[in-house]
Length: 433
Ligand code: UDX
Image 1: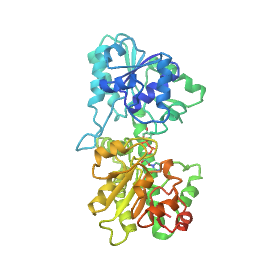
Image 2: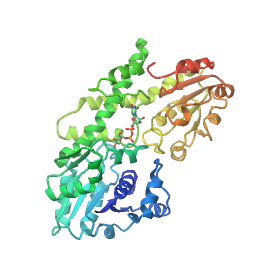
Image 3: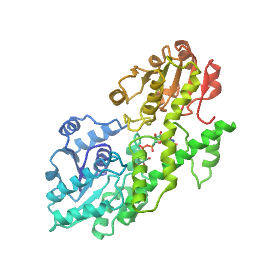
Image 4: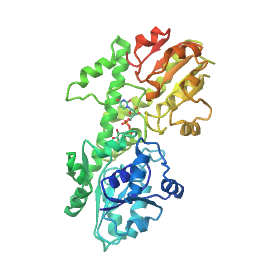
C-alpha cells in the first residue's frame, strides 16, 4: 500500500513510522520545513521511546520518507491519512478544525485516482461528512472515500499501542474503503487485535467516549482518594480492591494530581460541546472537567499545607514537570497550575524533569531549573514528586535528607512507602493514604 500521512506531529509520525514498519510505503508530510529537514537528518521533533530507531530502520529500508510537498505525496496514494492538530478553539472549547479542513482541501486538489482519505486526528462527530463534502466539491471526478480511524496512542507507549492495540476502530460504510483499511491493518489481524468496522459518526464518537470514560475513571479515584484522606482509608488498597473486579478493571485507577496532556483536557471539553449542540447534555463529564480543574490548584494548597504555617519565602524542589513520564509534553500538565499556586504564595521553586525542561522553561521562566533531583533538593524545605519518572522512583532518601533544609516529601503519585521515607526522618504526605 502507498500511504501518505498529512501532519508529522506526534500522531502522524508514530503512525507513519509504524505503518512503514508493517511493510507499507509511507510518506510523511508537514508544512514545517524545519521539522522535515530534522526528520530527514534523523532528529525526532518529539521524545518518544523507540521512535528514532523505528524511523531510522524504515528510512534505511526505503519504506519511509519525509516531504513538504503535499501534492506530490498525495498523487497516486492508496490512502491519505489526516493527522493534523485539533486544538481547543480559544474561548469556547470546541475543537478547532481549521487544519483538518485545510488539509482536506489540499488533498482534494491533489488526488489523481481512487483514494481513501482517513481522518486520524480526533474530530467531532460529523467532521467526516464535511470532509466528504470538500472531496465531492473539489475533486468531483475522483473515487474518494472518507473514513474515520481514531488513534488510541498513549504518549510514552505509543509504538507498543500502535502495534499491539486493544482494538482498531474504522468508520466507513463503503466496501472499497473497507478493503483498503483491511489491507493497511492486515499485520494486526495476525496479532488478533479486533478490528471494528462501524459507521463513520460512531467511530468519531467512540474516540471521545473512550477518552471521557478514562478521564472519568481517573477523576473518580481522585475523589475517592480525598475521601480516603478524610476518613482514614488507603486509596491504593481501595483501587486494588475494586480494580480486581473484571467489570471495573485495574487500569487508570491511580490517584494523582489530576489528568493533563494533549488529549483528555481538550477531548472532554470538545465532547461537552458536541453534547450541548445536540441538546443531549453529559453531566458526568461536566463534573469530571470541573473536578479535575480544581484538583490541580488543590495540589498546590496541599504542598503549602505540608510546608506549615510560615510557608512564605520557603523553597521546594519540584520533581517531574511533564503531564506524565516518558514524554517531553507539558500541555495541561498539573505542574503548571501547581507552580503558579506556589509562586503566588512567595515560594521559590527549584525544578527538574528528565525531558520536559525546555518546554517548561518556555512556559515558566521564573523557576530555578536544576540538573537533577539532588541539585533541585539542595536547601529545599520540601521535595514534591509531581510526575512518576523512573528516575524519581528510587531516590537516595538519606542523601536527600542531608542536603535539604527541612525533611518533607510530598508524593503526588504515591511512588514511595510511608515507612521507608519516615524512617529517614522525613515528614511524608501522599495522595489518599
Ligand atoms: C490518552 C489516552 O490514553 C490515549 O488512548 C489517547 O489516544 C490520547 O490520550 P495520553 O494523554 O498520552 O493518552 O496519556 P495517558 O497515559 O492516558 O494519561 C493521561 C493523564 O492521566 C496523565 O496526566 C496521567 O498522569 C493521568 N493518569 C493516568 C492518572 O492520573 N491516573 C491513571 O491511573 C492514569
